[in-house]
Length: 269
Image 1 (tube, one colour):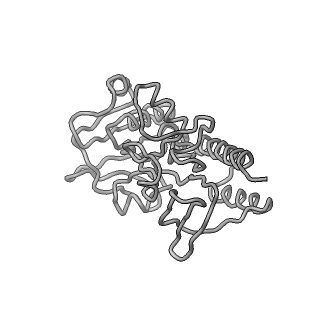
Image 2 (tube, rainbow, N blue to C red):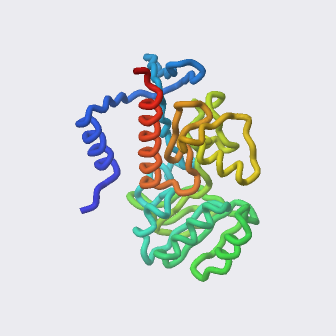
Image 3 (cartoon, rainbow, N blue to C red):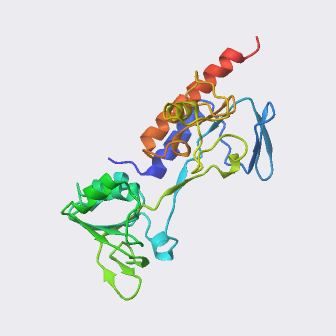
């Protein structure tokens, strides 16, 4: 039998607690990585730590429609890889004009019978090779200069109302207008890239191979370490390429192992 996401999360929490993990359901609103031990603040508490692992994730950017919010998980999605299978032989829409939108649309051609790409401008910002693949695919139709006013349906997506009076029948709607990493609280504390993703040693190594340089010092013995020693990061707040639960879990495991190794090697006898 399949397992729903919330049920899997609860099982993992119970499993972690069984092995002595202390879980605090708090929102960290401020950090200070200039001091040792590090200081982390919630609305009502202050915490100290010798090591920090950041796994705050990233959030999909949505259109901001009430009907879109109401129908999330009922035909509205931000992940074709996660939900594409549910739309076998159905008609779907993809909103966006970048490489992510092109990738989502092309992936959906494995399942859906028809895919509309809805873009608010008259040209894509995606790479030319991705544009060519989309424009030449028989299942994909592009609707230029098109915006969505409302997602139609009560208990599931039944269509979309476009700006003006036109309506379009679709069974699913995939929003692919970008993701925002949940890293605002770390600005000025560790190095972030131009989109707000955390730069780890592994990411920095790739940037240097590409000719980019940083004024920050990185410890390349630890792939998940950030620009501040003993602050590690993993998952979707670092990774803007895959954005999958499995890859995020793997990065989190790597960060935990590296943090443990650093503490073991640097602990005082």
